[in-house]
Length: 228
Ligand SMILES: C[S@@+](CC[C@H](N)C(=O)[O-])C[C@H]1O[C@@H](n2cnc3c(N)ncnc32)[C@H](O)[C@@H]1O
Image (cartoon, rainbow, N blue to C red; front, side, top):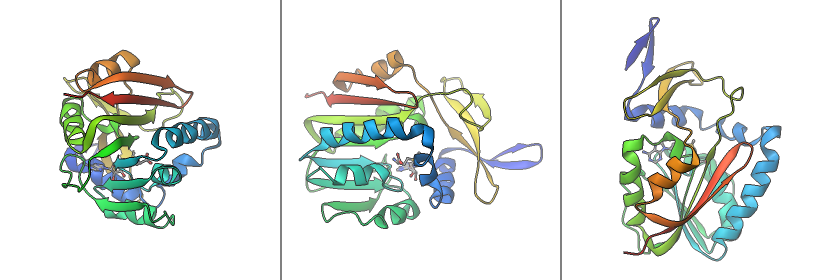
């Protein structure tokens, strides 16, 4: 917990989970912004094409926006998130019988009966501390088949698009900002905006065939998990 101008700010590893738990009912507003619709339409087609007929594991699925996109063309989708509240919103989307929702931490995934052909994590990479990236990818890889595909989508930094104040950069180069919960409680969470060369470097140990697409509001990565 931090203290700034008398206000308590929740920080540390629990802050991200707590913040999104608070926001579960209103989170989907980010997908309703008019200016984002052209990018989102393109990304939905991109995701649908990559997961067609595949067995998909989704990490930090939140309220299931991308789960629903996957469900329309994937053979099977297992969507996980640490927050039961966000998954309850996802459940309300009337997802098909090919979708399962499981409460699970991205760093402590349960054992599954199958190894998945595609791993996806949307709007998640930006919330990973740089020193957690390897741990996350290693955890995800352990649940994917050799040669599986990785899909990541996240936000591009746009100067006037965010009202969230930056609180600091740490010595590892992670960027933190303050977010306000629905009850006005304050959270300090990691929000990074990596450049392409940094993304390539972060993934190079684990993935090949890394393709990065930058749109106006989002970047998207498709990559192949290296076969050892
Ligand atoms: C920015 S939201 C992204 C939700 C969804 N992927 C999307 O693109 O709409 C981040 C999500 O990460 C989840 N989360 C935070 N920490 C997590 C953890 N350690 N393990 C799994 N999920 C986590 C939150 O509950 C939240 O749903």
